[in-house]
Image (cartoon, rainbow, N blue to C red; front, side, top):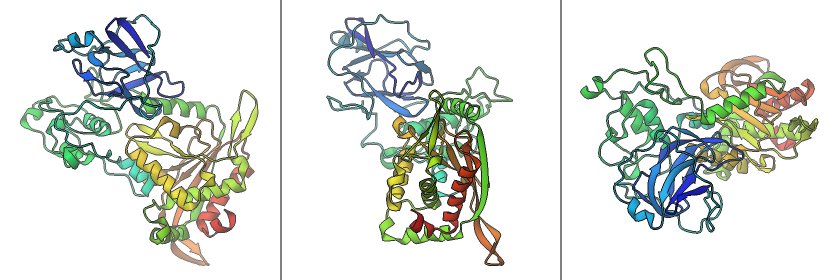
Length: 480
């Protein structure tokens, strides 16, 4: 990952932070030219097609140059930061006059990798020294956990989506110490055009939260801000358009990171696997009652209990009764690969795009264990710490489109999977129950499957079994 341009300067290259990834976007630099860094210190955060990860520097020294500004997509293997080490560190510690380069640095000569500790990612490998960060000005305690995105909360707890934020005023120049905020909050502020230096923090130890950013965005603009040219503000889930674009009538959003990978995967899936989607409308009144009962059960104290938990268990039961649905198509070998395990994917909408982390070996978990795994999955997603490994190896997926108030949809398969279940909104509707029309809790399920390996009979059986369990959840006991 490193090369030597002279005896005292080392170049740190963009590593492959996933399996076979070719590029990553620099989200945030934590150091600037002239800063002293230590072995294992995180110097930047990057976003790949799978997740956002932090990169530690593998040696001691002084930052000489940052080759790329924030927001740049860099190919794996390209040098991103130069650090003066050894005798050159003292000279590099003098005030740095050069600004961060706006264009890629020229290619450096390759040399053998130095012996000893090699660069490792946060959470990957074993560090031979303690990991330390450069102290932020004004910081007095470790930052609190990142604020949850409204989309992920809605996806998992069954509530509707949060109301969109009000249009924001253009950002004012940054002055004073660097405000304390987590990367997702900084990105939200950037998207909304909010200057973090003007935001009043409400989090522990002066941490700026998402609510603080939204509140600042809703405040009237100052006279200085009102004098600035008007601009079209993109949605929170988008990236602001470059200044060179004409933003008076339209906004251009670069496609990269998670959204770029998702788009490519969905196009490949849609035009490779022949999709078939079947629908069923089901009375889930008893399931909703069971959810309320479980919330009062001491065995589920502290666990996340919601309709998604029982829907997930119903799908696992249906797969157990119809194991051929849990398979994949091997084009090269011309074989159907039946999986004897279920890695259950849960689709979640985030500001960076759709991610689908999965619960490993979900088929072997009891209902309380499944509730615990769902809670852990949600907490990790809320903190923006979903790892690439957590999004690999899925076999079947659930997507909850009902949180947006829609009845159902026709979901596209995740590549390598044979089925995906979409859950619509649960609504109180007139329903014929025991010969009489009564108000009942009703939802619509949609199951898409790969027709190369799943015929109509098998797909219908799986969907019917899921519906039967949700209509009569006592079947969980006899079928599980």
